[in-house]
Amino acid sequence: MNKDKNMNKDNRNKKNQRNWFLVDATDQSLGRLASKVANLLRGKGKPNFVYNQDVGDFVIAINLRQLDIKKDKALKKIYYRHSGYPGGLKSKTLKEAAVTDPVWVFKKAVAGMLPKNRLQKNWLKRLKLYAESEHKHQAQKLIKVE
Image (cartoon, rainbow, N blue to C red; front, side, top):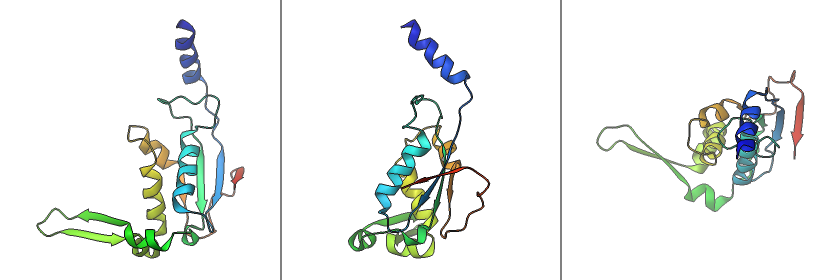
């Protein structure tokens, strides 16, 4: 029992080495790619992964305009928001949202796959999204994810 407590303290005191991953979203499924990115953000593949600590990596997703969204899903999935006034319910299908702002659609999908806790905000800060192939993180040592 004591050994486990000390191991958690050791993990907390060590400086976490964060990697930078580059994900190309061209012709990839929205949900499968979002779950892969969520796991990278949390650091689930790392040997020092602990549920209550933030040990994840940075993720850059490019070419989000070219995500593969199935036709029936694009028409059935509806995003709702409300202005707070009577009759103020607004709705938008996935197809409409993907045309206007594919970055928002992908960020919402990734956020839905992360645990809803205090760490979620930190994970989403490390997610860098771009609709096209240009990004401003060339100075980082990027690891390409297939």
